[in-house]
Length: 399
Ligand SMILES: Cc1ncc(C[n+]2csc(CCOP(=O)(O)OP(=O)(O)O)c2C)c(N)n1
Ligand SMILES: [Mg+2]
Image (cartoon, protein in one colour):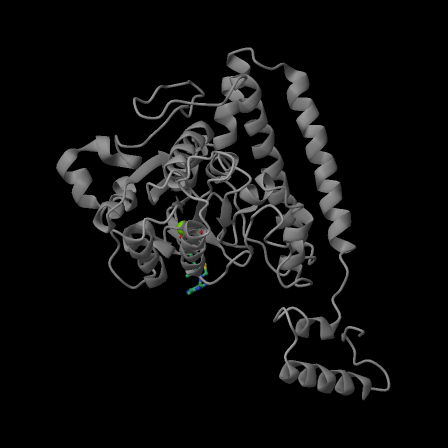
């Protein structure tokens, strides 16, 4: 934890702004794009209309289901870690709207570069959540094929995936699948990262490359207010989205707990990228309600009143309020989803324990597409070493 004198938490966007402009700057400020209030009331925004196709109610019901099931994946995985079945788990509690809203704005031809917390986006890309557990159980080196669902592997090295994203987007430009006017083919890339990552050199270099090469990228930053124990005040003196202007592309701050606004803003940014107009920075203003990971104890560095404040902005509760208040669903709708969540929980609990243990030699098989002679020799040597045991050493995996 930092030894520096504490900065005021007011506004979480730099004390000077709140001092200069007053309470309107607190908690996101007036620039925050919102389409659904924390009380579940629809509000309009002059620049971002909600375009959910023919059946808006059905789409919003779908978002609700996605968010509830994603939260269930998260709570089951957390419990599995507590039972010793996973080595670690990175919770997304509180960030469901940011992930489902942005994830559902993607088209099949878009490509995603996630961090380690994007379980909701993985859900939108049809990645079996059991595959996420394989990684956190330590029985898999990646979990899924990135070409299935155009969803890259989880990246633990903070910010590194933004470089991969820009490189991939520039490749798409060279493949001629950006800005052709063919809506079935034109694609874009979304790079997910956090508020803490915004301070990394890699991320800032990505901004520059994407800007000067006009790469089709949406930088989707989930500002969950914390980078482990470092608060947002230690990352920026201005709202994060305002940084984009300095790099030469637009930045937008959206209510990250509002699934409708996250959908609308990401959709607009993706459309812009696909049509060849370059990158956009989206700052989803949200909150990490859980711990950084299961190894972390947030009560050591933040006040419970902060969490209580954000609980009132819960991303799932506001959609539930909207659906109920407007008579769009009845109780059966919620009961059915609860039943689905139970089944999903079972799938995860049973499936996790049944995940196959990897052979120690498999580590040599997925380094290169074609095995190199050097690696083949190393594999042979390691196999001979394993064979030298009359009985397998305790705890060792069988070949
Ligand atoms: C290059 C690098 N430096 C440090 C770390 C250790 N680390 C893991 S998570 C994290 C904080 C990231 O915070 P943020 O970008 O806000 O994402 P969040 O975890 O809040 O989603 C750090 C410093 C790392 N994984 N990689
Ligand atoms: Mg963060």
